[in-house]
Image (cartoon, rainbow, N blue to C red; front, side, top):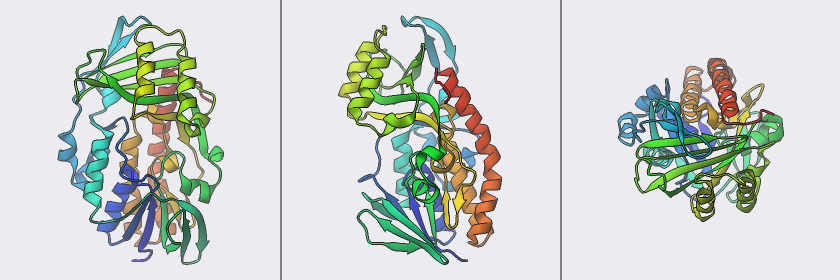
Length: 353
């Protein structure tokens, strides 16, 4: 087997799953993560279709099932909070849904003995050589790896260094928003509530903790630039978008400012002509994000990680052949999911750019 040392940028779902499969196949894997530790925030994530086979192959399917949010559905309400319809649980929760921190902890516990994790660091430069990739880091000493994998999300550092500016790859779907937890003022019980208006949407649900609910406030935007701005600007953009809104929106805006688990993201997709260049390859959102509105991000990350590992195993480490096979196998699936993401953003009031 050739190309036995691999650097994965990103300790999320795609990075951890890929690391496990590569270690199983005999690779020496290092995972670098810019966060100072394991990420403990994030919305609920769901699993659909082939993702269950990947979870089973990872050996964590039954443990994941034990953390099922057991959602019962979502109530649609009008501007005053009056019920106007209902959506089945699988609309948002898929076939199985768990809190993202639980998935992250399970994957990390599985892979910590197998992989070398380096937290609080990030790549600053990549230089291709005939027999490897020289990598420079913000804090660590330079090293050379046989292969480098970008599994570092929508604003992937690996993608920017190896493929070009974010603007060349990102396609904004016209919607941005914040997620946070708040007191369960709606009395939700393993259920959700959704209100959509002219360019705005409110979604809240409660599952594991009856006293708390997860909240998403979304609004139409022209670009994903707010993702990189300070929290104060992100909050102000949402206050402006929801100005004059009734129901419980004013209370949710206050809760947003007080939340210590606030995060902000835009519904954007990644479109590239190829997912690899030389000895560098992308997996998950870094290479082909379908947007949160597709409901396929976690499943796609798991399926993509396994597809890449299988392609490398089949090619006995020949990265050129493996990367070509990986992309040929996965691209039709990704294209289908990206269409779902575009349709979902439109349903939530996004303005496709």
